[in-house]
Image (cartoon, rainbow, N blue to C red; front, side, top):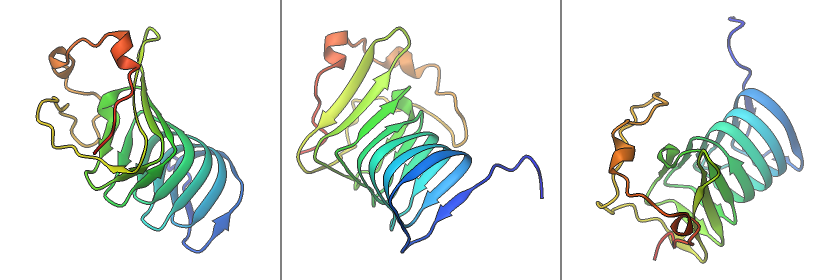
Length: 176
């Protein structure tokens, strides 16, 4: 067994945890139900059967395929899969290129996605009501980020229109 391997955790389906608090350098996979979360982890995965309610999570990367509600996520990379059900959450990111949302992911209630930029300016997108994402817009350039590459295509920001600070703070509906 190698000493360089990060510790990993698994919360199996059927297990309900009412207060999860701690720091984990490695990965945590949630297939059960967790409430009242205060967590720092290297990687967090909420599986199709996983449920997370209320709290704060900070992780290097987050994958959501299950149900989350009332959670504030702070991460540079977030992926919401086809089975994701996200309601009343805040997602704080360092870059808009680190977010992947499947077209069948479901957002309900108030979901706010905010991007912190160097220099204090920030952008956000939020929506309320029940909606599904629709990522078929061809007008928005997509960053070319190969799997495992932490650096976005350096030419992509040059194609992005300059957005004023007022536009960055505007509420943007997430679907129809």
